[in-house]
Amino acid sequence: MSGRPPSSGRRPISRRRLIGILVVGPLVLLATGVALLTWAYEQDRRPKPDSGRPGAWTTVSSEEVSRFTRVGIPVAAVDVRWAYQNGFQDDLAFLAFRLPQTGLEDFKSGLPVSEWTDGGQQPVLDADGFQHAGAPVPSDARPLTCGGFLSPAPAKRIATRVCLAPHPDGTSQVWVRAFQTS
Image (cartoon, rainbow, N blue to C red; front, side):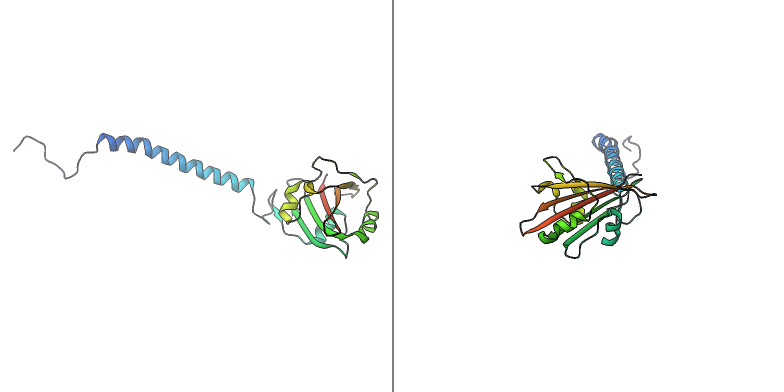
């Protein structure tokens, strides 16, 4: 006998391997935990469409959006796009369409807007809802004419903003944004 203890057939773990297990193992667990928390945060922050959760984009008809915004869609309107977002307390609706120049004045006179003003250089409407609906972004259009009104509904007060801009094909682009104020 050589004086060495009998071997069980396994080699002892080297220092390098032990340090690797003790350092890399917890780092892998930490990275996995951070990835899971990020995924959970994004799922909570961006709810799935039609989930009914606040902030979710909801599938509704153009007629429902038109009713909510208190702006009727003219028969001659083309390229009608709309979106509706379910809010925590307040809902938000977007409506966009192009209208022939011949029907523009009739459309404007049918709205309860007291004054039409120049949109100026400031962003007058959120681009997110129009982008979600696949409509052109209002901030890119010039000259922009805007007006707004507050509907005196007993249960819901809806603030509506309407903006118009000439389109290169001879029509006018119309953007409507409305949100519930109470």
